[in-house]
Length: 231
Image 1 (cartoon, rainbow, N blue to C red):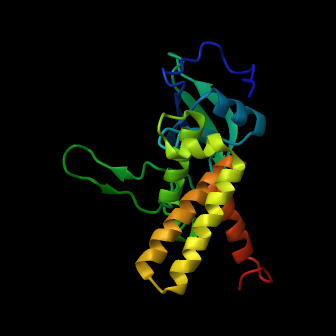
Image 2 (tube, one colour; image 1 turned 90 degrees about the horizontal axis):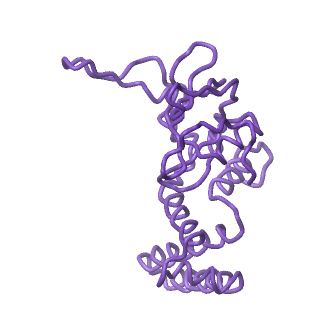
């Protein structure tokens, strides 16, 4: 991706190409969250008007609200005197925090024991919004890393090196193993074989450039229909 020419040349990205970014409610000034951006995330934010960040744990770009729908529409981007921190003034849909709170900064401590949680900020139930993809997203992130930076001896890297057909064959093979284990009514084996199938399906998603969140969004779309595919 071509870096947007509007990005100031003096911005100081760190050794990993990242810069801290603080999101602030553009209407009332409430600090909503802290994250990191790289040049591509800044470019996507400028191009789309929606806040994009870079996840250090998952090693990938992400758009705020890509799973929950709670996007941040960016009013303006500021940077500090040292040019090493960004401030995004945004219009936040529903809430910024994955806990359901409006802001990620909902806990207080004052150094004298009056610690606790601030009230009145919970805007949604996270169990009803998020797909529970946690570990799948983490594994997917590792798979993407193995694809981009194949280490010697990596099984995942070897699958990518052999191409799509090999990946498809592994998915079919693992699906057959699930069927066999299910016919035998071997509960532990079913769990084991399904874990293998899910893993190789994640490899296939990475090969196809599809994120697990997109599958979750499609399931949520179908499940939410009044006359949809799912009751």
